[in-house]
Amino acid sequence: MRLLHTKNLEFVSFIGTPIEERPRYAILSHTWKDDEFLFEEARNGIRQQSRKPRRGLRKILNACKRARQDNLDYIWVDTCCIDKSSSAELSEAINSMFKWYKESASCYVFMDDVTLQGDGVMGNFDESRWFTRGWTLQELIAPHGLIFFDRHWKYMCSRDEIASRLERVTGITQSILRRRHILPPAETSHRYDYRSKCPGCGQIDEVKTDLAEEPISIKMKWAAKRRTTRPEDTSYCLLGLFDINMPLLYGEGENAFGRLQGEILKKSPDQSILTW
Image 1 (cartoon, rainbow, N blue to C red):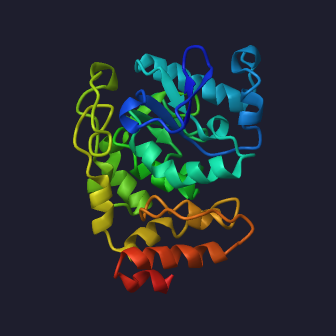
Image 2 (image 1 turned 120 degrees about the vertical axis):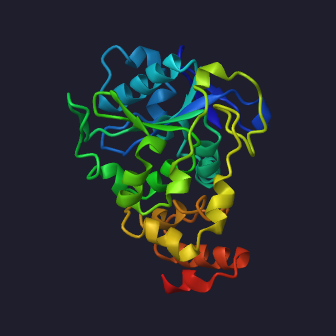
């Protein structure tokens, strides 16, 4: 895992580092646009390019600013923290994505098509593009603590505060969406067993158990109307949701879903996956 330091804007590698030895970190959830700031550019130095940042870099800098406010020295952003030229690193990242979001101290959802109005109304929230993308499904579910920001990086709300609204928009069970921090991340500095407790607040997090109890057909329904740029990613973005690890074969197209079905059937007697 490669993290970005929120103060000096330099990368620190924690590849192979045990969970308990990794620092607490924030994580960003967003939708990709054409001008994202990628690892290939970031490796040349972010600080030097931050004087006149384009939109993709400005998003990263604002996420770092928020993380610093939460006393988090590190952040993970998918655009710049994965070297996608390395097939091995990309495969590890995609297979680990759910775990990385789950183990974050706080997740920031940046909605660049939503504006918080003066009266507190979140304009266009339910219609945000963020709810239509495949990858953001696990990003909504996996973190213990998740908060939403509008296009100007104004705080809108936390996930648990609008769980019933999110259930209407996404179909996801409210009990999963109501998980929240019991203390702000800044007040918790102890080391925890990240495999079962939230590193942000130390509370027990049973999201994997909750997901395992949901019928496969229901989880597939959550993803049914979501889209990805590449056809294979329609399946790859569901690996964490079903607790599956499998090799990535970009170019296989819709065959990826057949492989996903096979892996799910190895773990579960629930045959409803075959109806999709």
